[in-house]
Image (cartoon, rainbow, N blue to C red; front, side):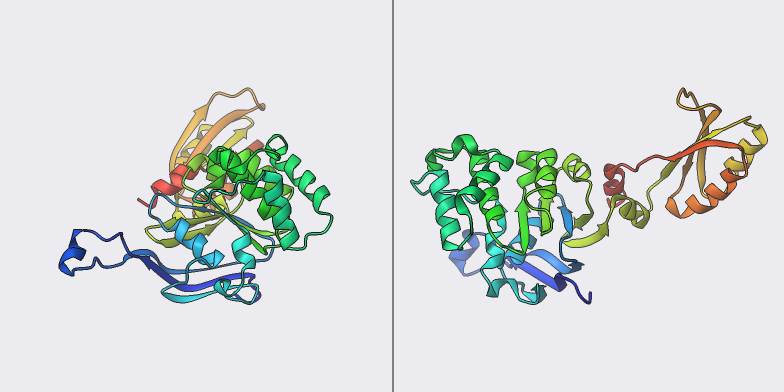
Length: 315
């Protein structure tokens, strides 16, 4: 983890459930584990989707990174500092839990924030960000009267105005959509370290950036979808178009180590016979390519793995 911009080492965190009937008899409920022995690192400017089902620890992890919570044990360092010791990290934390209750317009909120943080060229900067995020039509409306989605966009605008080194978007992509989130990551948030949480399989897949997979309060894997597929050992599918297909090649492929199925498929993409080969996992890919390279190949394609298949392998 040397040189990491964001670094977590053996982080554990828990929370206490609201007081129940047991508290009346002096029996406090034990804390609930939210994260267990979490370790990972992110380089400066990297972007990652933090995916997990309910109660996997996503929101707790974001609050730890923002400094709103401190871990029970372990260490968190962002740009050489603990997040709870600097307010800069909180400025980049956008959550569905926050709502603007001030009786001010959206513009007044953004302008006041910019003045407090000494943002240069403030009016022009607000106008630029408002256009990109899509809040031009609500800038002069009372923020307390905005919908939850509109309030969320005001938070995104504040994060864009801020100089927070890490941007933490907890559940935001589930509301504004993966396409809009990708647009913002490539635009106003480009160059900053970004974590985006989601429990939506389609959103995580559509973001098309590395995924940190939280499973049962721990980090199961982190990497691209192909990295996760390799680590979890899901089945892989390869389509090959072979000129002058011979049945001795089919027999050879069907008996090849790791091959689960070989099928002839209809095709209108390329000349030649299309052969679909399903293998046990990606560890068998190099040997399969060696075997196919001995045939007169027209084309070969590896089908992308589905994120749902990766998740199913963890169950």
